[in-house]
Image 1 (spheres, chains in turn purple, orange):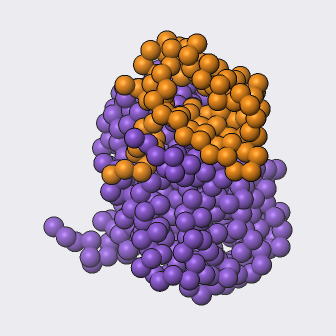
Image 2 (image 1 turned 180 degrees about the vertical axis):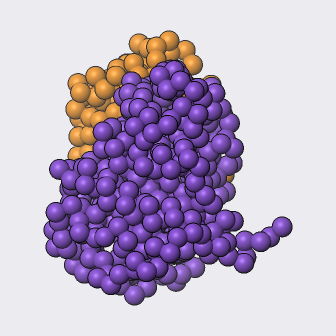
Length: 454
Length: 90
């Protein structure tokens, strides 16, 4: 029989510590929509998404009500559009038409983001990949809900430096086209190394080609819950600290597993994975930086931060793995600067710089996320930052990503406002020394030696 | 058996539990267990109820309890028991 204390604990996690299920994401394959006629292709895409996801929001709300746990986002990810649009698109504008169809479908089903405006070019680019990448600035600035991602590297293939260099230009162009809104277009664009096919989190979600027709993936969260449990073991040994985080992560993930199974059953869509993530929101108390500081670091970014984050990431996985039957996606702590109020505070007071963030990405998921940089940062420097981050992912056999926002017209000391869950961020300075001679070489960085496992 | 956990918090006064119990009786909901504590002027109550014979939707149950809560000046919440079983038991 359910115990009074357990009920009290769960409900105070939800009410006082912002426990939520961050997202139910339905992956939908668009492979069967392929058509050489662009109008027909867009129509098929719209019809398939609106049919498959028609009950996604209502079922999510229903489950949230019955279990008393908020399900913050309901979203859709689709097959990378560079594949789906390859036989119909002959120019970047053709791909933009598909982005518009995705946006319309997302609006119709009542979701705020749809992911999969993507290209996977870690080894090389097809003509369609090239066109899609060229279309990204226009596609992301002329739509509201479409999120894009480009995979430019992997441990198995190395890093496609041609694509990295192009992405430097694409990020700048996207920033220019959305400069009236603090370059917000870049908040919907992720550059990946080793991206998972089943990631439920935006902006990097896409439905991989190895996935089934449709699938339900769930992303859990709960930084506030972990922070509260860490505050109860102040001064205790690392053994006690780790055990505490692990037990908390177990409980949080079990809530996600329950929601995932229910959503799968009610929607008649197979359950894919639970993503064991700690994802912050700009809300006070829903912060990863708060957990790091609760562990004993004065300000996030101070010496010890990377070790503290490594502990957090590992214990979240250890607790979460046992709580869920299938684990996948990005799984780990996220450190998006603008979406984490205490991360913003750390950056503002000079404790956290972009180089320390880069070090932190070696031990957590995912990468340099929602980092606002000066608007005059060159495309070459952006490509250099991306290359560094991709190298970390490639060598360490993990997912890394860059969601960099060169905020046009702003410089270090200024602030960018993105609004809602995307939050706000101080402009972080980047190195004034160039890397053009390196990123303009062209070609591919070979795969590292430890990738040859066959 | 479909079990629902009902929790109530608010300022204590005569008739709170009676109002909730009457609502359940009127809606064919059987009470399996009740626990309550008072801290100072405040009441904290939990009930486990069987909703098998309740003929309306969960949303209507929540709404009905919300109306009772407004009348007695308390916050009443209903949740399916599975969330607690999942989070606290292996």
